[in-house]
Image 1: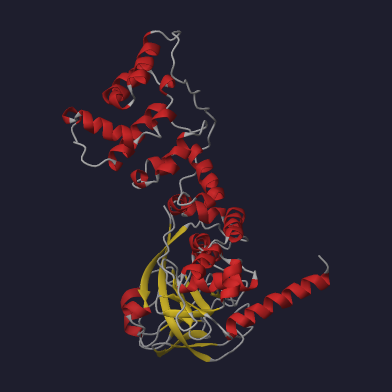
Image 2: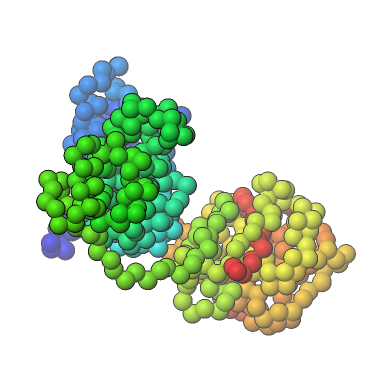
Length: 476
């Protein structure tokens, strides 16, 4: 496409963005909770199959069509409606969770090309996050066949490491289509007898009113279980199981197999060369699977910072040249204080944070949404007057946000007068980044002689919306 054509498309997209913003001559109101969006039927009809259906079946009131959307947040809809109007979407600056939350609503609105793009973007760029949130991703992917790329992504992982799901508490709640998809895999790395055990466990959970004692089961109970497992039973490789496992595990439930299949299984046990009518599925392929290194799942208890922020802070603590992957974060960040919960006062800070070594303080700036903070490898104390402590390992930072494309790390230059402590105020870093002793009022000033880099353009006092302090603990 020529440069001129590209400029024309950008102009075209910007014009429709302005139309969305101006609400000029709107004739549709979409309601989400308490918020309303004033939109245009021509755009909605052409761009979304969901809205096309709604527009053709909903009765106008005063020449306005009202549509109520459920199961969609205002934040997500703002992104999607901008895409509908402009044909553009930027995912690079959004959190992984926000990007994933676009998937189901995009599918509901019939934005097929966007559904495909979101899945491709996550798989290509956010693999670590998908693995970290595997149970959620796996469950969602089988809600609709339009999520096929994520289904394949998850099933490929499970084929090699099936116990991620089979040994989890969520196993009996997975959808039938997800289970069938897994059973069809010739490379499923688990013994067939264990697969049978899990299928029985899942089937019992889905079938109501089954006695806990198998000896008390009636013919109807077996028939009910057979109905539940109707799609799963043909996928078990019975003829690849040992006679011992057949007798101990399959025989008690032989009534759910049907007379012909059970007779063929019994025949093969007694005479392996005998001819039978049942289909003999091949043995599953055993491959050499390197077990994943044990990972401690990172738990993010912050209302300000995301997982990538904590990975970055961890890298700075360790003076690592490259950032940790979010699946490799070597620390736990235990929340000690949250201003909105515990108070923003010096008393609350010293009561909850004093004498604890290795802490990170993080603030969210009012009006700008900047995320600033600092690391103290020492302890905080309640001195009557300000007292400074020396360390070369402290640093301050400004974390990546939609308005800041890259985080800024600013290490201390001189080891003296680094950590400032006094009972009448909360964290002080080098006397240049500190709380003003007035609850939510903070101050920042940059000097080249004390910190390496400037964090923000304005050397002024400012107010904050939130304040959190975390104890940093090495994972064992």
